[in-house]
Length: 508
Image (tube, rainbow, N blue to C red; front, side):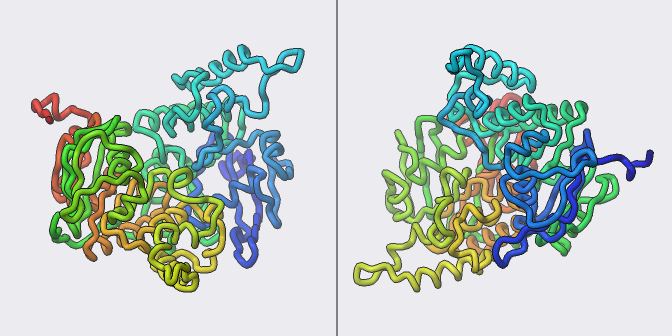
């Protein structure tokens, strides 16, 4: 039997889906073989998420056919998807943080006694077995919300594995994982590949796709562009298929000349981090790097007034700033794009317009009344700047793709015209074309005099877009370097403490 005649585990033919005047999917096709990792790639809005919603039963196709093992099936609900062995690990976790790990593992399928009472002893015992199956060292009795996002994702994977999923969709699975958790995920994927599970892998991280995938399918503008074996294409080929053009020098920017000190941080200390001291100048981009748990986001939250500092001094434009809350920080000229846009950065049920204007309405008041026409005009201007469809202005922001949600979060601070911007993982879950747009925007903002602090787990990004690099470890800044001469290896040596052990490095 030739490779092309292998019976696919899953086949989707001519799937179309329309939302009003928008054709989200136009007769696309996709197939998945047993024991294969098949990457599905495309820019945000290309149709990947819509197709997966149809596969999971959360959306209904307008036309097209779905086959499992050569037999046509109909998926009308998530229950149908589970019946056919289809499981999806969403980028935005589908869990209940207030419940325990075990309760999340058995959600909707709780074991009961003969009297119909919840059998907690059995639930915890079997939950531990589910976790052990993927070698996840997690206490099933812990509240899920007390775990890191990465470990919460491991719980979702444990549930999918325990349900004997035959098709597993992984949507940006490493976006919130540490390096160790990522390597553990790779091990689980290989384990499931060996067991014959077919996996759809959605990621914007090229190095992961080339490490894991057997084939890649690319969508663009709701249409199928092509399917290729990984050994037949290069990253350049795939990028060209995704965006319809070649993208070179992703991080390229002309040298910038920083101006006066805008932000001066001295011995900033919180419950989980510090003391931290650094300066940020007008017209420069400074990246803050470090391993997960190093304290990067905690520093950002202290500056933005989301957490209370216990010690230290923050001076903005020559005046001391002691924000009691984010509203006070915003008034002091700080804007922040949060790491977790779903729970901390956006009002998902509210319109795109409201998510963008929420921090700037005080600037559009005349005679005690908000001038809505002026607000709408200003919002549309920022949407155009970020290449967001203007006809989406009244849509709930949750209807946008992940990358476009991130653009909406950025537009909020562009409208506010904040002079200090803190961008925590600004391109997480963003496709390569949109990444380039965001990098160009960051460069433009810096050149206009903004002071920008970027927190990024993507080392090439952290180095490539910044002027200086601050490396954090154990809640403190342990090294500062020029991005022009920085290497990934050097950053990791300082971030892990390896350089310190070799050279006797120490900090106050």
